[in-house]
Length: 122
Length: 499
Image (cartoon, rainbow over all chains, first blue to last red; front, side, top):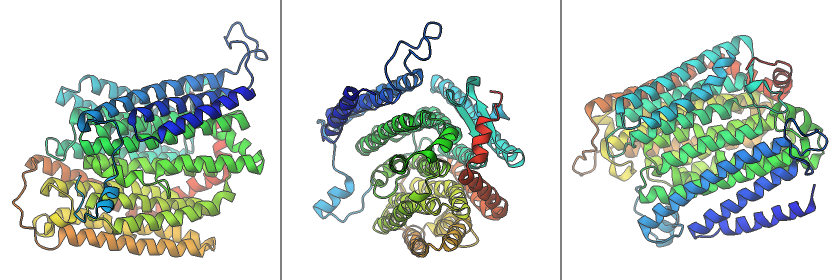
């Protein structure tokens, strides 16, 4: 297992979490993109040392890389790609509705903060 | 029977593509959706009967070894939950057809196809035999739920949908990290092989994996303190959609938690799970008491009831886990029927805020009955299914001499009853407020469809109480298989199947 990769996973996670906790939607989207990379990289690292490409007719099991985590990573990359697009669509809709790019307050929080006792209707 | 196991996942997924293609042709889309859901429900009930008689069915997709390939496993636990879940989805779709075109209804050309995707995700997460496919199944289910929650694009939906998507995405990322940790420490993601290898790991690594997945599944299940996204987002969706979320999504989180933590022998996490379970019960019900909208009260109850299922798991005894299994089986239809009753109140009066409705007992006596039975069941009063499930849990708690959690569970039940009374007196008793009657656009025929679907759903919950004996036997057998681990391992590894 390579120490460099582990450090990279750590850095990507830190950057991702920092961005994802922001109130700006576009930063949240970027944060999850980075977090997704960190998780995929962790999965690859878990598969053991790097080796030759694990192609069926050319590679010997001892010299080639572990193909299973690569297959899993591919699936995870596709999923996180799709979800990034969905998040972008949501933030665009939010932008249309409110004119800005920020996460809005929770209804309950706002109600308590303003001392408004009226029932919440959605 | 192994074909049925695979079809339960593949059929709804294929049908969703067809339904999406023909989404503007109303009749054709409905035929595809209803036909598929009916077929899958029938198959899963047949599967339950088969598994009950002949034991676990396994399928190796593509014929790969469990070490490398995907295995689908229908054991007692999976078959039981699958049958209840599929029937529930079918009935909610029928209800949604009745509610169509009204103000509180959802857009039918999106809901049909997306419900099918959700069905595939739910079926796959119940049946899958490996951790990574469980991740994919969760994503499938959640992507469908993201779309269902936000498809009308209203301001409230986009706001709370954002919270919902972000929290679930974060949990999914943690899930993926968890898969990496598990793979690094054991070299496999197959649950049966993990059941063999995780108990051999050192205590530190084992605890790490156990707690990590407790957080992952706990976020999906909305356990304390990871629940705050739920009461915020669920009430903003159209109520039919909330009904399906309430009945299924969180339960699948608990289902995965029960499966993972029992099979991998995380018994020493029991006390941690019990403490979380107790707090979840009380916080959920306390939140419910503070609300004044029917949908929000019921949403907080989802959280509270998760505590009961986790209590059964935390006991780590056959009686306890059996109690959790029967509790899941009872909760799926009961929670759904309560929300469907909420949707009918909304269709009748245009709102579900307690201060603005009232006197429904006089104008809609049947609806009052449709709410009263499951509400009493939720509170755990005899002779309803909630009583059977809670009795099983309390009994298991006493047998394991965990007195504190038993007391907390009983207090939680009493408070649940209190908040059900609050809904009852706000919505059904009293006089209607002086507001002009609202035209919510529900046709007479639509109302009949909605009320029949809800009635059938209520009959299902009564059926669970009526057949409590056989269902308890199956739950106990499921719990025995899970805690022992041996039957699961041997059925996956030795029995090749013929996929």
